Length: 285
Image (cartoon, rainbow, N blue to C red; front, top):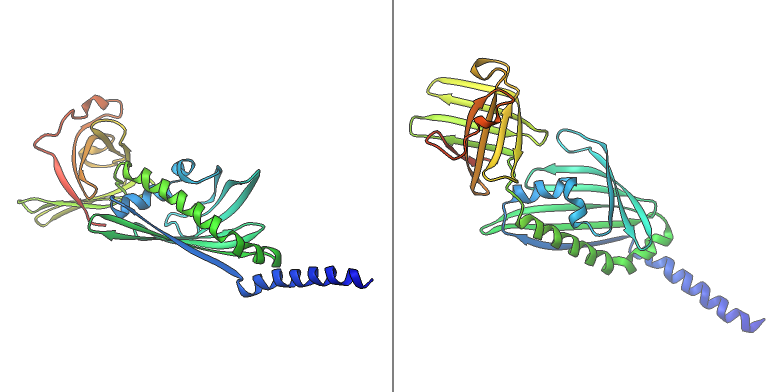
């Protein structure tokens, strides 16, 4: 009987030690830093677009949008990833969404809960992306297990965001945000592109000012020159017409835009090259 007490005691001590790991370290935290040569807006918009997830998230299986909110905060989704031979379903909710600046999601799964915060900091020659993640086990067992997994999880995050950075380097600039132009005649135009495909177009010349809202925009960066079409006009000379446009980027924060008007089925009205009516617009934010 005495010989059995020693291994039992050892087992009990080991179990207590394992339990204490979770008590002492109830949360596992780590961060990774990455740098791209593109602006923060392009990096941000590419990262949050679920279309690109299969290309950079390791073990990606699927993505499902559960609830979308126009401003981003409160949006919920379900992402499925492989972990060994198992598929994990992770519920996500956006807690912070500042375009080109910050993105925070809360995560929940049967084994854990946690959050990831991504900060975008403009640099002289690009953008720094700082990714900070916290994991908290959902039970005493997983609270004690996660400290052992910290190195693996950090490596996975580093590899994922390294792949993301490589994709961002070759991604087309994003239009989402506000752009403006002014010329020597004091004419002024402002485009505000929303992520939902709507545009607010402001025109001003002298004391005259016109704002067109709820204009629809479609952007195709895969052709040369890139195409930008505007429609949904309900008054004035553009009522029922489409502006078939072309776009080129001087760099991520400056673009050239030219367009001609036509009926919806007259895409051949699109200019084939930039002309004297081309406008140059700079990103405001």
